[in-house]
Image 1: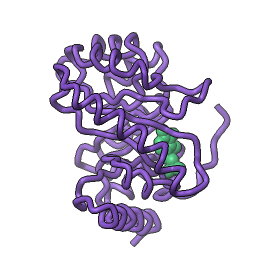
Image 2: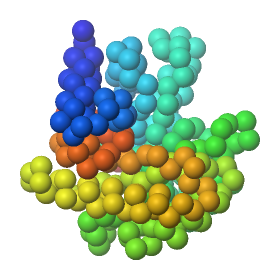
Image 3: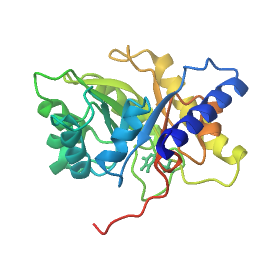
Length: 241
Ligand SMILES: *Cc1c(COP(=O)(O)O)cnc(C)c1O
């Protein structure tokens, strides 16, 4: 097996173990492979090892990779599922709407409205998570928890989006207990919104929480989708942007 294939298996084992120790069914957590900064060949290697869903932070870089893997002769034949997990400025909504299957980082109604308007008719609805700023960092992306319900209600009514759940990126925390505590806040908000039972929440089933360093704590707190980059692809070196 290749390094990426081995790493992928290692992450899947971590997920399975965390599910077991949290008393959750083994397939209740999906793995999103975060391929930002890695090239199309790395994605292909992960796809050949069985991975289906990939996450990208930088829209332009993601769109290029999506195109490369769809091109005839790319060495990979089946469609992959692409998730946008980076900030979406207004001038990038069209690229996201036209190329991605999911976006995790909607935190303003304006962005959601543009994505809905710009989603091409021939594609299924864009799957959307609302990003919440659970630990309250002043300069952080994400809607404050107190404003989440209003945004959820508004986004749920947009015709070309399908509201799937919440996403959060808490600050790195030193240990399991601290990681768990902040992930748990996201989970509680998720449950409150679901219990409110607003229209348009029929598919509100996704809690996008946890990365390489804290996926166990996220799974114990109730994550249904972990976003793992370095644990699969290795250390990232960021090019100048
Ligand atoms: C980069 C990134 C990840 C993956 O982080 P790792 O620590 O490499 O697993 C997950 N989510 C978001 C939003 C990211 O930007």
